[in-house]
Image 1 (cartoon, rainbow, N blue to C red):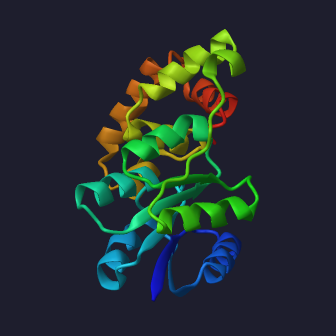
Image 2 (cartoon, helix red, strand yellow; image 1 turned 90 degrees about the horizontal axis):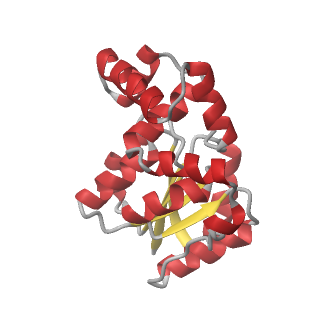
Length: 208
């Protein structure tokens, strides 16, 4: 019997994913709403495939991918997210994901991705040529984003959404001082002067 784990904090989205999985013949479908629930469920249920959102409470999706790759988990991962593929797809590929699907696409895309992955293939978005699709400012800012680590990018998202240092520290199991250091580093790396400009940067580049 084919089994799957859905890692998604929105119930409506989980319901849609379950419909796709049922159509693809999955008899056992498990659910997690937080990133820190994932590893126990994988150890206990041994799913064939994981449908993973990146913006999760608990442990961030990118961190989950990296850990699954490190631990050589046998399940294959389909990333299903609203985050921009141009900034996240390559990171997910490097971290071991087998597919990347945008939530803005039709559910047929998710179905195709699941079918491809279960057949031993990968499924990724064909990204437009950077030189054609982006202006000079966009290209320059994309390079800055590409140079961020996964953890820096995750903390950038939290900060841009208005989360406080202590909230981020609790979510990511870091010390307040560590988060503060990351915030200072991000302001420096992205050439912005304040948290307001950091949020503007994130909005301008569709990171939130």
